[in-house]
Length: 286
Image (cartoon, helix red, strand yellow):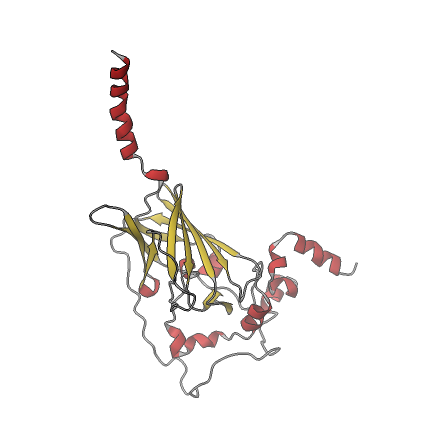
C-alpha cells in the first residue's frame, strides 16, 4: 500500500473519533438525581442548633443578625413558604432533574436546565456566552446563572440572588453575593461544590459540597404544595418574633451541651482553621 493509501486508511477512523468525542471532554449531566445526606446530616435534615456557627466565616453583622433570630419567625405567613435561594437549596431534601436546551438547527448548547423539587424551582444556566445583567436588575430566588465547561466540570457563576440564609438558624445571606458552583459527574454520582462570596455577611468564602446519585425512580415527588396558614393564634398584627441584643436565652445552649468554648460556637473565619485551637489553649490560664 502506498503512503497516500496508508494516510487515507487512517483518515476515516480519525475523523470518526473526532466526531464521537465531545469537545473538551464535556460531561453529560442530564438525568434525575436523588440527594445523599451523609455529609452535614444534622444541619441538612433535622436542622442546625441555635447559636451553632462553628467553623463558619461569618462577620460581625451576620452574628448580630443571627443572635437576634427567633425560630418563631418561620410561623409568619410571609416566611412559611419562603424559597431557599440557589446558594442554599441543594442542602435540603430534594429531587433534581437536569436537561439540556439546544438550538434545533445547529444543536449548539444554549442552556442547561434544572428542576428542583423543593419549592418547585426551575433554574436556567445559560451556556451561550451572554453577559450578566446590571446590578440593578431584579433579583430572584435562583438568580441569574451562566456556565462554562472546564474539561468535564461544569462551572457556574450566579448573581442577582435574593436575600436568604446560609444556615437555617438565623445566619443570613445578602443579595449582593456571588455563587460559584462546580458540577462534576463520576459514574452515577454527581458532586456539587458550592462557593459563596458574600460581602455583606461573610469574611471569607463559604464552601460546601453536596452529593447526588442517578435514579430511575419514576414515582419521585416533584411537587411542593405550600399554603399559608395561621400557626400562632392571637398574635398581634405586625409582630415579628426576635431577640434584642443580649436577650437571646439560647446563646450558650449549644456550647454547654457539647462542652465547647462559647467563642468557638459563635463562628468567624478564625474558627475555620486548626490554629484556632492553639489560640484557645493560649488564652486559658494554667
